[in-house]
Length: 157
View (cartoon, rainbow, N blue to C red):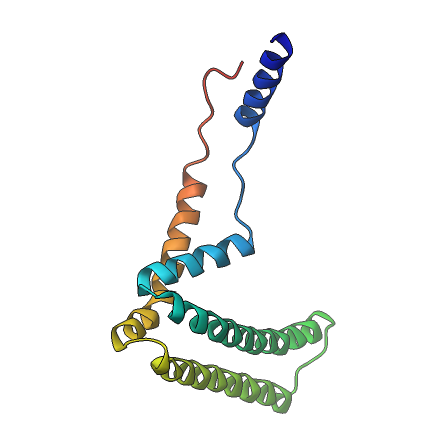
Protein backbone atom coordinates (compact mmCIF):
# COMPACT_ATOMS: atom_id res chain seq x y z
CA UNK A 1 0.00 0.00 0.00
CA UNK A 2 2.87 2.31 0.85
CA UNK A 3 4.45 1.78 -2.57
CA UNK A 4 1.13 2.36 -4.31
CA UNK A 5 0.75 5.69 -2.50
CA UNK A 6 4.24 6.75 -3.57
CA UNK A 7 3.57 5.80 -7.20
CA UNK A 8 0.28 7.70 -7.22
CA UNK A 9 1.98 10.71 -5.62
CA UNK A 10 4.75 10.68 -8.24
CA UNK A 11 2.19 10.30 -11.01
CA UNK A 12 0.14 13.27 -9.78
CA UNK A 13 3.21 15.46 -9.24
CA UNK A 14 4.37 14.76 -12.78
CA UNK A 15 1.14 16.22 -14.13
CA UNK A 16 1.41 19.20 -11.83
CA UNK A 17 4.84 20.17 -13.13
CA UNK A 18 4.30 19.31 -16.77
CA UNK A 19 3.93 22.10 -19.30
CA UNK A 20 0.86 22.01 -21.52
CA UNK A 21 1.53 20.33 -24.84
CA UNK A 22 1.88 22.55 -27.86
CA UNK A 23 0.05 21.48 -30.97
CA UNK A 24 2.19 20.52 -33.92
CA UNK A 25 1.25 20.59 -37.60
CA UNK A 26 -0.46 17.21 -37.43
CA UNK A 27 -2.64 18.34 -34.54
CA UNK A 28 -3.67 21.42 -36.50
CA UNK A 29 -4.49 19.30 -39.57
CA UNK A 30 -6.58 16.92 -37.48
CA UNK A 31 -8.38 19.84 -35.85
CA UNK A 32 -9.05 21.34 -39.28
CA UNK A 33 -10.50 18.07 -40.57
CA UNK A 34 -12.66 17.67 -37.52
CA UNK A 35 -13.92 21.26 -37.82
CA UNK A 36 -14.62 20.76 -41.53
CA UNK A 37 -16.73 17.68 -40.87
CA UNK A 38 -18.59 19.54 -38.16
CA UNK A 39 -19.04 22.84 -40.02
CA UNK A 40 -20.06 21.28 -43.34
CA UNK A 41 -22.12 18.56 -41.65
CA UNK A 42 -20.49 15.93 -43.86
CA UNK A 43 -21.93 12.45 -44.09
CA UNK A 44 -19.58 9.48 -43.91
CA UNK A 45 -19.88 8.94 -47.67
CA UNK A 46 -19.10 12.59 -48.36
CA UNK A 47 -16.09 12.49 -46.03
CA UNK A 48 -14.66 9.44 -47.79
CA UNK A 49 -14.70 11.25 -51.12
CA UNK A 50 -14.06 14.78 -49.84
CA UNK A 51 -10.80 14.43 -47.90
CA UNK A 52 -8.68 12.72 -50.57
CA UNK A 53 -9.63 15.53 -52.94
CA UNK A 54 -8.77 18.13 -50.31
CA UNK A 55 -5.40 16.51 -49.68
CA UNK A 56 -4.54 16.50 -53.38
CA UNK A 57 -5.57 20.15 -53.68
CA UNK A 58 -3.57 21.20 -50.61
CA UNK A 59 -0.47 19.37 -51.83
CA UNK A 60 -0.66 21.10 -55.20
CA UNK A 61 -1.18 24.47 -53.51
CA UNK A 62 1.83 23.85 -51.27
CA UNK A 63 3.98 23.09 -54.32
CA UNK A 64 2.96 26.44 -55.84
CA UNK A 65 3.71 28.28 -52.60
CA UNK A 66 7.14 26.63 -52.39
CA UNK A 67 7.93 27.73 -55.92
CA UNK A 68 6.87 31.31 -55.12
CA UNK A 69 9.07 31.33 -52.00
CA UNK A 70 11.96 29.92 -54.02
CA UNK A 71 11.71 32.76 -56.53
CA UNK A 72 12.08 35.42 -53.86
CA UNK A 73 14.71 33.47 -51.94
CA UNK A 74 16.86 33.36 -55.09
CA UNK A 75 16.62 37.15 -55.44
CA UNK A 76 17.29 37.62 -51.73
CA UNK A 77 20.36 35.36 -51.90
CA UNK A 78 21.74 37.33 -54.83
CA UNK A 79 21.23 40.59 -52.92
CA UNK A 80 22.84 39.13 -49.78
CA UNK A 81 25.91 38.21 -51.84
CA UNK A 82 26.11 41.80 -53.04
CA UNK A 83 25.05 41.01 -56.60
CA UNK A 84 23.13 43.63 -58.52
CA UNK A 85 19.81 42.54 -59.97
CA UNK A 86 19.20 43.41 -63.60
CA UNK A 87 15.83 44.87 -64.50
CA UNK A 88 15.23 42.07 -67.01
CA UNK A 89 15.94 39.45 -64.32
CA UNK A 90 13.60 41.18 -61.88
CA UNK A 91 10.86 41.42 -64.50
CA UNK A 92 11.28 37.71 -65.26
CA UNK A 93 10.89 36.82 -61.58
CA UNK A 94 7.86 39.07 -61.21
CA UNK A 95 6.29 37.52 -64.30
CA UNK A 96 6.85 34.00 -62.95
CA UNK A 97 5.42 35.07 -59.60
CA UNK A 98 2.29 36.50 -61.27
CA UNK A 99 1.92 33.29 -63.29
CA UNK A 100 2.07 31.24 -60.11
CA UNK A 101 -0.53 33.47 -58.46
CA UNK A 102 -2.79 33.05 -61.49
CA UNK A 103 -2.26 29.31 -61.38
CA UNK A 104 -3.18 29.31 -57.70
CA UNK A 105 -6.37 31.29 -58.33
CA UNK A 106 -7.35 29.03 -61.22
CA UNK A 107 -6.70 25.95 -59.11
CA UNK A 108 -8.88 27.32 -56.28
CA UNK A 109 -11.69 28.05 -58.71
CA UNK A 110 -11.51 24.58 -60.27
CA UNK A 111 -11.30 22.96 -56.85
CA UNK A 112 -14.50 24.63 -55.64
CA UNK A 113 -16.25 23.87 -58.93
CA UNK A 114 -15.25 20.21 -58.72
CA UNK A 115 -16.89 19.83 -55.32
CA UNK A 116 -20.36 19.85 -56.89
CA UNK A 117 -20.39 16.07 -57.15
CA UNK A 118 -19.71 15.68 -53.40
CA UNK A 119 -21.19 18.68 -51.61
CA UNK A 120 -24.55 20.41 -51.69
CA UNK A 121 -24.63 24.09 -52.73
CA UNK A 122 -24.94 25.11 -49.06
CA UNK A 123 -21.95 22.97 -48.14
CA UNK A 124 -19.94 24.47 -51.01
CA UNK A 125 -20.76 27.96 -49.73
CA UNK A 126 -19.70 26.97 -46.22
CA UNK A 127 -16.53 25.33 -47.55
CA UNK A 128 -15.69 28.50 -49.49
CA UNK A 129 -15.60 30.58 -46.30
CA UNK A 130 -14.28 27.89 -43.95
CA UNK A 131 -10.56 28.43 -44.53
CA UNK A 132 -10.79 32.13 -43.76
CA UNK A 133 -12.83 31.55 -40.60
CA UNK A 134 -10.53 28.73 -39.47
CA UNK A 135 -7.38 30.84 -39.88
CA UNK A 136 -8.91 33.71 -37.91
CA UNK A 137 -9.94 31.34 -35.13
CA UNK A 138 -6.47 29.76 -35.00
CA UNK A 139 -4.78 33.19 -34.84
CA UNK A 140 -7.12 34.26 -32.04
CA UNK A 141 -6.34 31.07 -30.12
CA UNK A 142 -2.60 31.58 -30.56
CA UNK A 143 -2.81 35.22 -29.47
CA UNK A 144 -4.93 34.25 -26.49
CA UNK A 145 -2.32 31.67 -25.42
CA UNK A 146 0.44 34.27 -25.80
CA UNK A 147 -1.43 36.84 -23.72
CA UNK A 148 -2.67 34.38 -21.10
CA UNK A 149 0.29 32.29 -19.98
CA UNK A 150 -0.61 29.09 -18.14
CA UNK A 151 -1.46 29.83 -14.54
CA UNK A 152 0.60 28.02 -11.99
CA UNK A 153 -0.90 26.62 -8.91
CA UNK A 154 -0.09 28.50 -5.72
CA UNK A 155 0.33 25.19 -3.95
CA UNK A 156 3.32 23.97 -5.89
CA UNK A 157 4.62 21.76 -3.12
